[in-house]
Length: 109
Ligand SMILES: [Zn+2]
Image (cartoon, rainbow, N blue to C red):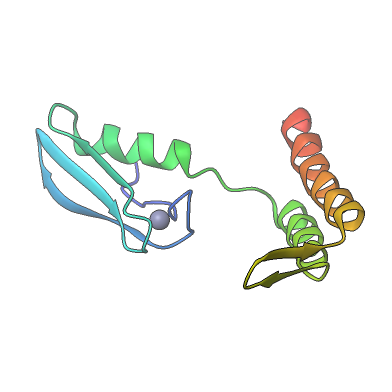
């Protein structure tokens, strides 16, 4: 199997194997989210497999739809010192569209 790690499932940054003795594997995210997979009893191959299972990729078309909806949602809210001003209907609609794109993809697998 390959030892290639997929990007962090939480922030998308590159992950790395910091220690790969046969019985002590640590995989960490290089981003700011501090995600770590640490297991002293698994092989490097198993740890990589587990990391990559969590770091599932979605097709570019689905990602594009998701990003477009989230971008549109952000156009309709603005953070102020005392809270958030938002167009609830538009933001809700865009978030539902984003969720629908993911749900359709999950159902199609
Ligand atoms: Zn991360």
